[in-house]
Amino acid sequence: MTHQLKKATFAGGCFWCMVKPFDQWNGIHGVVSGYTGGHTANPTYEEMKRGNTGHYEAVEITYDPDVMPYEEILKIYWRQIDPTDDGGQFHDRGDSYRTAIFYHDDEQKALAEKSRQTIEDSGKFKDPIVTKVLQASTFYPAEDYHQDFYKKNEAYYHKDRAKSGRDEFIENVWEEKA
Image (cartoon, rainbow, N blue to C red; front, side):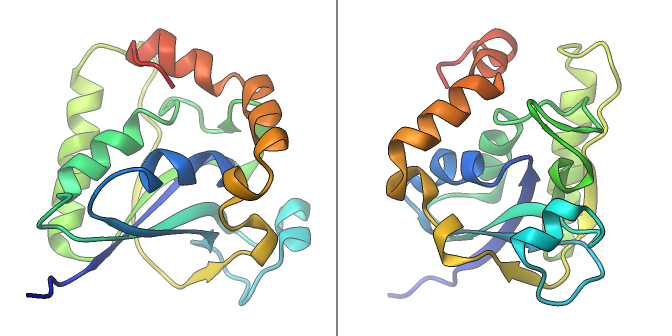
């Protein structure tokens, strides 16, 4: 019996750091790094770095909701980011590194908004939650060398992630091993 696969799209800063946390779960069939939410068709990484495309660096996840429910994917997402930082994530600064949940249907929108409210109500953060819940738009896969970066460039990935401050944040705020 084949299950109906769905898409989930998240911006959480550097897309290199957003692939591995999702890639390791049953029910996740693929995680693609790319760009979404902006106004430039087929943006390149170089255009993104200049900051004039309006796009977020994001990941598009293909998942089986019967194995990995969207609510669980949202929990994984929140634990990768600082939802109070509207200037980027960790050492990656600028609009393309902002956080957002891009919903693909009304159910995802409702679940994303509910999870955002739960984070807001948790008292875990003294600053307001700035992560947006936005309607998904065209997703442009990033260049091949960005795909599965944590596997292809393991040493550089670990070095960059270590200096970013992301892991310390996850451990301190979420009290989980990154």
